[in-house]
Image (cartoon, rainbow, N blue to C red; front, side, top):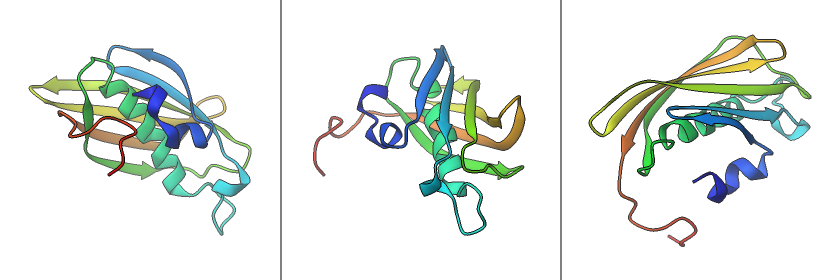
Length: 131
C-alpha cells in the first residue's frame, strides 16, 4: 500500500516507523500548505494523520480502508515545522478497527488528535487502475 501511495509521496510524507497496528509518519509544512492565516491548512494536517492511520490499520495484511475519522486541532503548525503523526491501534473486532493518531511538532507539542475507524475490505480494482 505504502509504495503505491502517490498522494503522500507528492507531499513529501515519509513512513519513519511501523509495527503491528502502529505507524509513524513525518511531513514538513511547506509554503504551499499554509492558509490565509499563515498556519498549516487543516486538510494537510488531517492528511498526515490519515496516512499514519492507513499504514497502521493495513499493517496486519488485508486491505483495510477508512470507515470514518475525526480530528481535533489543538495548536497551529507553521511553515517549516516538521510534523510527526504517531498512530496506534486501540482495538480490532471482526472487520472493524479503531485507531488513535497524535500529530506532534518539535519536542512533542501536540498539534492535533485524530481518531480513525477502519474496515477490512476487498478492493474492486487494483491500485493504479483507472476508474
